[in-house]
Length: 226
Ligand SMILES: CC(C)(COP(=O)(O)OP(=O)(O)OC[C@H]1O[C@@H](n2cnc3c(N)ncnc32)[C@H](O)[C@@H]1OP(=O)(O)O)[C@@H](O)C(=O)NCCC(=O)NCCS
Image (tube, helix red, strand yellow):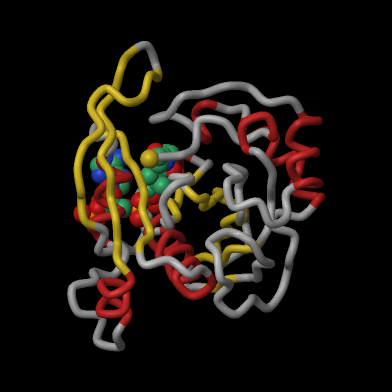
């Protein structure tokens, strides 16, 4: 599930500002610079100031960002402030990475992560391929794999989570392909597009992630090719 709002009023912050390298695991989930992440078919990098117009357009386009989520319009200024004020806020719902197609560097989506429960030590990921024509080609799976790898490598958590509208198979199938397990259902937890929706909770433990990331990648299916 993508967070319902991403501007500073709800995002409480922040887009990480680092653009290279990465950090050793920090004590607490959330803070710290982020770098560029590269996969075979997609790459992720923190949004830069020049990405603001594109992000603003996407984040205010229900078809791009929220076909399965609540949708509220943010102002350009609020997004700009989120970019400015963002670094280091573990609760921020703002995009953490711009997702690009590796073949031509074209931006195709955004992903993020945030401390999902203030009283728990767990980080949730969210994701959107913002160009509808680029969905269903395996880019989302690879991006979320990179993102989960990043969170487990840079945050001191034993679990990465995600939520998905139960009626959004592209989202929950993506999670299941990557080894996330469905842990339960929040009934009638989200109102969007005129109705109340059930939301599935997914989680991947560090131990499961280690097993899946073993060189033989037992149990991990490769993303579909476009
Ligand atoms: C959800 C989303 C990020 C998935 O990324 P993607 O690149 O389209 O997905 P992938 O091509 O990696 O496929 C992931 C799985 O979903 C399946 N899938 C993809 N599109 C689907 C669709 N429209 N209907 C049903 N299943 C679909 C794929 O077959 C694959 O499952 P499999 O491993 O069993 O074959 C993308 O579709 C999207 O951005 N949707 C709109 C925003 C959104 O819903 N974000 C998530 C909110 S919870």
